[in-house]
Length: 53
Image 1 (tube, one colour):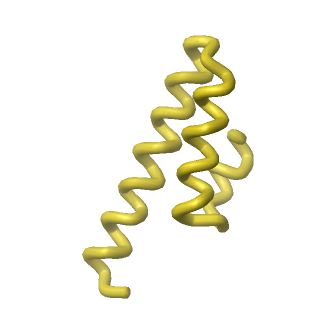
Image 2 (cartoon, rainbow, N blue to C red):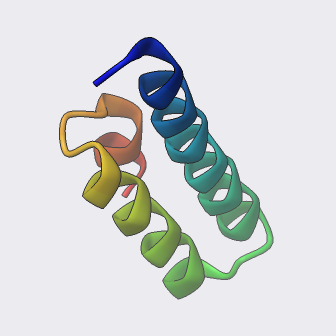
C-alpha cells in the first residue's frame, strides 16, 4: 500500500472515531458503537477505536 492510500485510510478511521465520539457525547450510544465498529473494520489494530468501543 502506498503512503497516500495509507493516509486516506488513517483519515477515514479518524473520521469514524470522531463521529463515534460525537454520537457518544450526544447520548446516541448505539450509533457511536456502529461508528467505532466501522473504524475497527478499516483498521482492527487502532487502539483508540477499540478502547472507545
